[in-house]
Image (cartoon, rainbow, N blue to C red; front, top):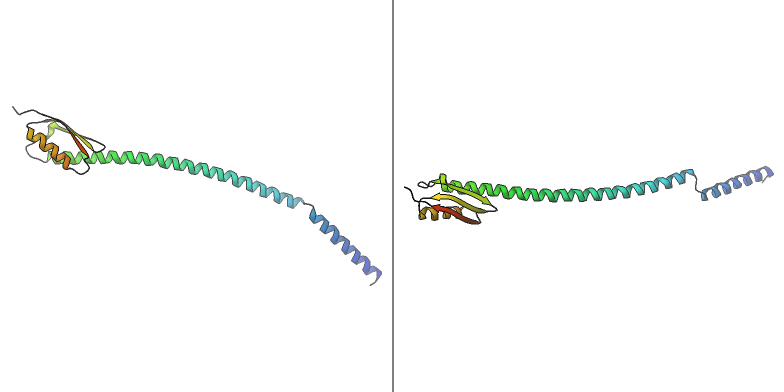
Length: 147
């Protein structure tokens, strides 16, 4: 090997040693990469917490809507029950049905007003009890004989 070749080999070796030594020190690209990773981790954690809060808020809203929906369903059921009881009573000939009021709350039907006889009193109560959806009948009808 010539002297010139040795110097070249020594120069290349020195460059490799300097290059390898530089790899041990974090450069601007490595520092920037590390900073990006840390920022991404922090953002991910914040997004996770925000998602958890949003999920909790959605659960609360759904629960509230469920309660509203349940209340609305009961009100609709009561309205339907009232209509069925009125239809049963008003369809019977001989009853002065315009003097009978029907109200339903949570499946409990309340009858108010007046009928002309005890048999009408009993018959109206029985008709109301036979209607689907009626849990109980409170009969507050008064017997007022016709004049």
